[in-house]
Image 1 (cartoon, rainbow, N blue to C red):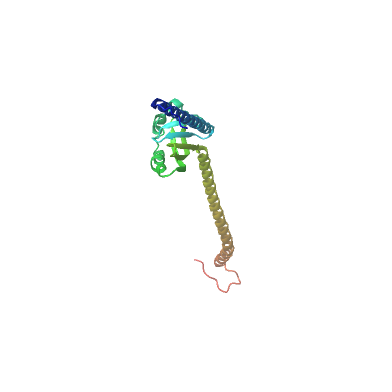
Image 2: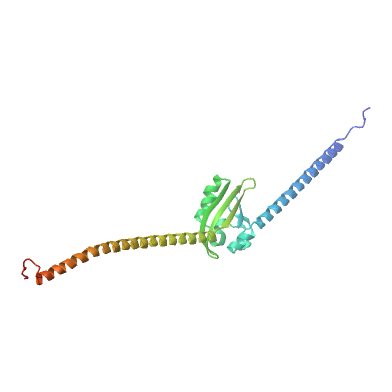
Length: 228
């Protein structure tokens, strides 16, 4: 049996409003959950960035520093106040305006999601000359760029010293080979001289005897040869 009491437009609007409020509350709950998940993910990512031992920058799409890890501040002796929000090329009074870095960020990285071991050498006012390997990754989903740096200055210096030592050892080996070569030539020359001295001594002796015979012929001489 149908209810004879008609539903007024007011009650219909009220019921629709209740449904709408319920939908909004459900959506808000989902949004709050998503926001909390996002905060948790962001906090987790920040902790990872902080624990990385090598210098690391998180750049926005327009190449401004969103965050830097403690290793970056310690290595390059700068402060967050003069780093965060700055265009990377403006960091430390333009110390980071490096042609090789521009090539990486503006020419190579836009065509590659990731780029590893890009070597850069620069002299910084506060810490002096440094050689670094840059590793960059483009995160398109969040429009960010991760730029990690490995300071290989000490390694390069060790490699240079090793190369210098190898070159010096090779030079000494070449000198030793030349000395040995000349020593061998000296021994050969000495042997030849010795072999020559014996026949020459005999010849000189015969010449002396002949000269004496010419001066004072012996009785056994067949004919006296006049000396002039």
